Length: 80
Image 1 (spheres, rainbow, N blue to C red):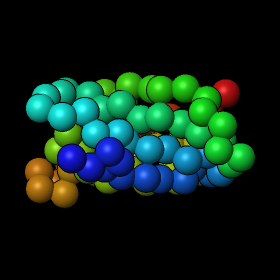
Image 2 (image 1 turned 90 degrees about the vertical axis):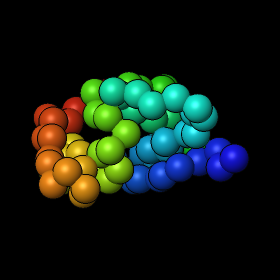
Image 3 (image 1 turned 90 degrees about the horizontal axis):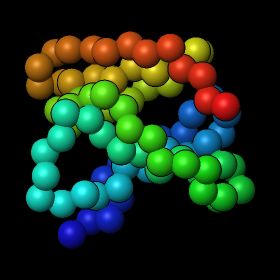
Image 4 (image 1 turned 60 degrees about the vertical axis):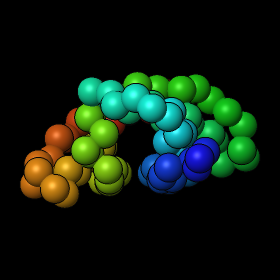
């Protein structure tokens, strides 16, 4: 089983990793956040179903994209 499903880098240089959590379908997604030096910061839960399989960081917005359902969810993005 894959351990990392997707990786993203945000505007602050933080690495967002979506870990594999096998056997379950969620109405949310977990991401492990690491800083630019590789230090683990925290695990967050985004209110996005697994069908939202792409994230885009644009200025102060986090955009979740569901390509199959042709839907977007846009969140204000602040990382402290």
